[in-house]
Image (cartoon, rainbow, N blue to C red):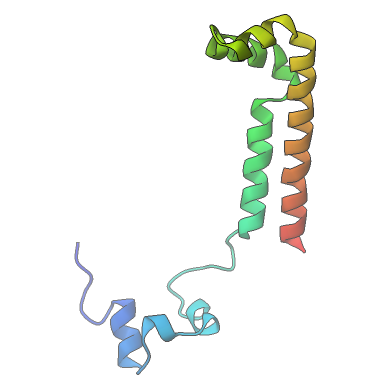
Length: 113
């Protein structure tokens, strides 16, 4: 589906004497073609991604996480360390989860300020 002539954002801005790459940010947000005011700040989206990623390694999923890690690392020296030191591996996963969750919430808080 092709846009109708004169309905293209570049044609409209060229008709006004300005080019799309030279339109100021204030003018771009006032064009009415998109609603950028309702979008999340990039930091908030990154923070949310960190929190969701941390949920995957949450300590309540620790038996599943350790089992998946053991299967993926089976036959390697890292798999041997995981099998012989499950408490240390669980503690490391828990610390990683806490750090990732903290970092995600910190990014979301920073984006809201």
